[in-house]
Length: 186
Image (cartoon, rainbow, N blue to C red; front, side, top):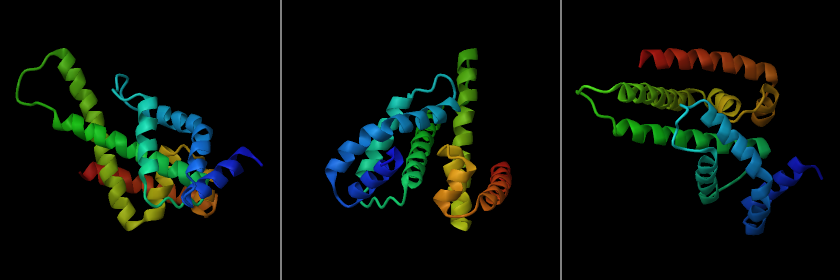
């Protein structure tokens, strides 16, 4: 049995309540989840306080804590993990924004930190735009999440969504334009 089939089988067993399946699954997906976390954090500011390992562990705790885990496929699992990691980063950015002080003179270091704070604001704005897109077109939102946040190729995204790669490309172009427009208007 190939590794991906084994992981898919373990995901299904775990979804059916087999706790031993989770124990067997963890070492098989940990490396991929860590790569996904490193990819997310690679797009963040260089001095981000979260490290890939911490992001994986937080996402893992949220994955395990899900009451109903009905994994449709390995791509679905990684898509959910990517969404959780994005949410963790957005929550982290929101906490940083909440701690911001204003109305006083700042040093160069504080000004640089403020610029990093704006990246966090961009992440929060993107999250809001994705939530709005999900309400009007869940498939386009899912395509964006799987491709950009989940690291799936167009073909893998197409398989995960059970649509053609051409449709994924068309959805992605439309979603990207919509998200840009939405973020510029806010």
